[in-house]
Amino acid sequence: MPRGKLIVFEGLDRSGKSTQCESLVSYLSERGLSVKHRRFPDRTTPIGQMINNYLQGQSEQEDHVIHLLFSANRWEAVAAIEADINAGTTVVIDRYYYSGCVYSAAKNNPSLTLAWCRHPEEGLPRPDLCLFLDISAEDAAKRGGWGEERYEKKELQDRVRQLFTDIRATDDGSDFVTINAGQSLEEVEREIRRHAESCISTTDDASPLRRIQ
Ligand code: Z5A
Ligand code: MG
Image 1: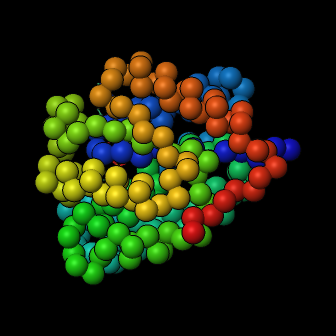
Image 2: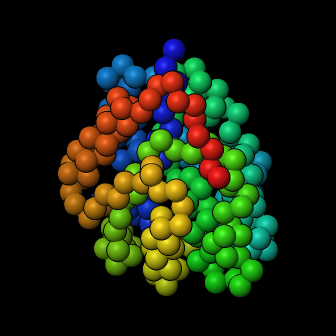
C-alpha cells in the first residue's frame, strides 16, 4: 500500500492556517482519500495542558523549558503520525516544528538561538509539503486584532515573520511552498489544493518518510 503524505500548514497568527487546514482535510476526504487532521500544540495531552496554561498566562515557564515542552508535545505524537502514514493515511497538521523554532527564537533570549531551538526537533518526520501562509503582521491584525494569548503582540510577530524567512534559508527547504495569504479565502484555497494534489500524486510512493536532520 502506498504510504500517506505529511502536509503541514505554517504561518503567522491569523494567516488562515486553521481555516485552510480544515478546508483541505474536508476536500481530500470528500475525494475519498484517507486523511487525518492534527494540530500543534495539541492541548489535549498533559504536556499540551501545561502549554495551554502558559499561553493563556495562567502559569510561567522558563524560556528553554516551554520550548522543550512544545517539542515534547510533537514527539509524543510521532508514533501515531507514523502509524497513520504507514497505513496509507495522509496527515495534515496545523503548525509544526517551524513554529516551534521561530516563536522561541523570537524571544531574543541570547541562549535561545534558532540553531539551539532546532536541535530537539531533529529526527521528527519531515513534511512532504509545508504550506507557508505568508501575510504581514499588520494585515493579519486587521482580521480581528490580536487576542489575549502570550505571543499575540506586533513586535514579536514581526520578528517571527523574519525568522520564518531565516529558517527557510538555512533548512532543507525542499518541502516549503509560500502562499500569499492576503488573497481571498477562495484564492488561497485554490492554490493550496493545487499544491496538495501535486504532492499527493507526485511524491514517490516507495520513498520512506524523511527525518528532520
Ligand atoms: N507555538 C509555539 O510557540 N511553539 C510551537 O511549537 C507551536 C506553537 C506549535 C498558539 O498557536 C501559539 O503557540 C502560537 C504559536 C505558538 N502563538 N501565537 N501567537 P495556535 O495555532 O493555537 O494559534 P491559533 O489560536 O490557532 O490562531 P492562529 O494560528 O493565530 O490563527 P490561524 O489559524 O492562522 O487563522 P484562522 O483562525 O484560520 O483565521 C483567523 C481569522 O481570519 C478568521 O476570522 C478567519 O475567518 C479569517 N481569515 C482566514 N483567511 C482569510 C482570508 N484569506 N481573507 C480574510 N479573512 C480570512
Ligand atoms: Mg489556528
